[in-house]
Amino acid sequence: MGFVEAFSCSLCGAHDGEAIPDDKVKCTYCGTVFRRTHEHVVIGRGANVVFGPNSNVRVRGGLRIESGANVSVLGTLEVVELGDETKFKPR
Image (cartoon, rainbow, N blue to C red; front, side):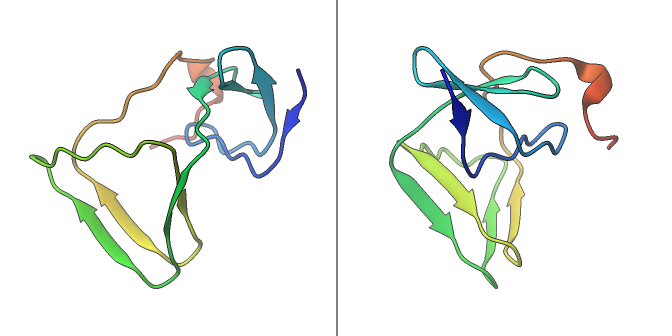
């Protein structure tokens, strides 16, 4: 369906994503599929944000974390479809 600009895979670090049906984006390197969103929450450079283990936060739309922001997510993150785990960044 086409290349997705400003995509960065949170699992392998690749910057190429392909738009696929149902508002999803597929990482062209590891194959992980993410749900695309259209509204954005931006956490700006210099921000320190912690989503605690008991937080119940839902962002209806995209979340962009700018370079220089410190963000900790102690809760959970839904991955729509897992890609090739051998291509993920080591933890």
